[in-house]
Image 1 (spheres, each protein chain N blue to C red):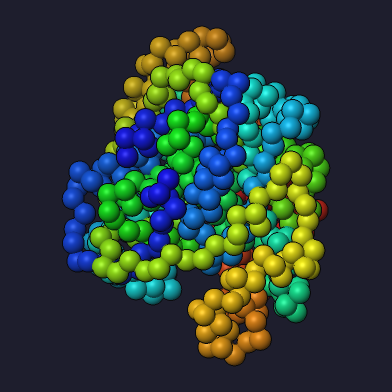
Image 2 (image 1 turned 60 degrees about the vertical axis):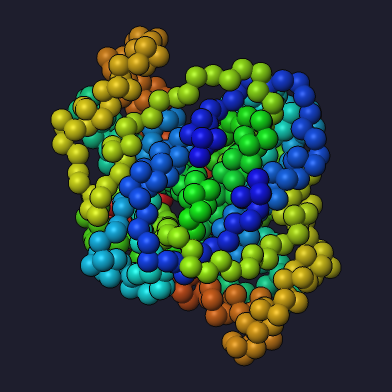
Length: 246
Length: 246
């Protein structure tokens, strides 16, 4: 519990290789996690090769962790292995739809988080790269993924060089609802976000981006509509090419 | 690591309440997990009320854990809170697309898995209910979820009455790929699934369902195309009503 509560994202790593037996333990811990029908609709791509990392780095928007970390894992939803198993057993089921995309994504994420917890328990640090979904088609090419294998998320893992301060979270009561959802009033929203807005780092963030408030930095700079719509369309188009219908 | 590797799904619970301080610790452990841009696009609905559980049970296909467990959590993607924050700050960003549905789902799943690990560390047992996505619209009504709040998964949590044997997993080498995806031949598929197919429980499963092999039970009984297509269309239609465009 203390381990989970002391989680920090690690972006600076020591130039120290992760021993093979520890990597294996992390992955074994990952696959023990619950998954839909125990079908294990996922695959884990291991990247340690420097040239490969150099090809992947721009697809993760050149976040420096990709080159700095000794290990990059790309966690993929994998319908390919299961389909092939069905095929040699003269059967078939249709997973090429939104529900099964989401089932596979949930299973992949659960697996990934188990790897993270196991890694932190070993004194390693991790950083999630949400960019895997943004550039899934290109990542797929570099990792030679066949049809039906979709990059969901990626992790950099290594021994921490710098352990930063813990990041803030909204107060717990802001995200839990007892028995029924109680919707937020303007007042409760202001109260929930007050501490976050008043952090020195948030104020600096607003200033650096020449905005009036923190919400505007999120909505107009970091995650603005044009980017969201662009990358979502790119993903939908590619998933359609992969046979997914929505 | 041993904790993660000894994970079992618990379906039978003792009639023993989870103390409030332990529940709080589980939830605090959950929200410390990594999440996209630290926006915390999720909410957790807590169900302990027996009448509420009785309403939810059929939507989880009457799996007995729902009524047997002292605690049911429904983990939701939540765009509502963030949108309201943007609104009172006179800004807006468009998250009503596939990319952000997936980002929010990944964050929700990571949060959920942290709760599971924390629970098991406390001697509690958990069971995931993938059915949350199948009947998301009806669950949403019972939990009074506003637009933009989507049930992703659910967990039953309680003190184990019976701790079953560990479930099988494919050999680790079946799901990992070093540097590049090496696709599966018919032979390698047969080898990967052999141990699973040869389990007594699998053989019984095949016999009970009057099928020729295990893959057919999965593809033609448990997760057959007509069900997959039906529940996926239901989900797509409801998400479209919620404003998501694909």
